[in-house]
Image (cartoon, rainbow, N blue to C red):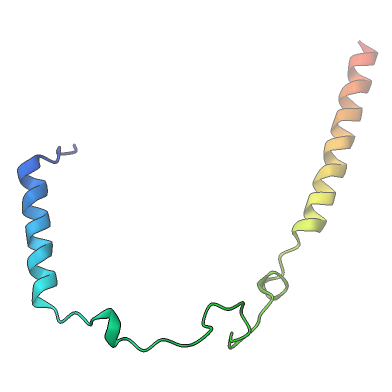
Length: 84
């Protein structure tokens, strides 16, 4: 059974979270040191891995096989309908 969230409950939750945030030491954005070109296109990646090859995913082969099976099924259906 689910309980509906009332306005009082929502206000209480927000105030609790606000207190938690105020207790923590929050670093200013100006104090954070950034890395130049961190999002510049991936040249700075540590390990360039082709995950599809590494995981052995063979989607294209499976797609071709599924298409062949689909064509065979449609041919079988056509033959069955002709025989009736």
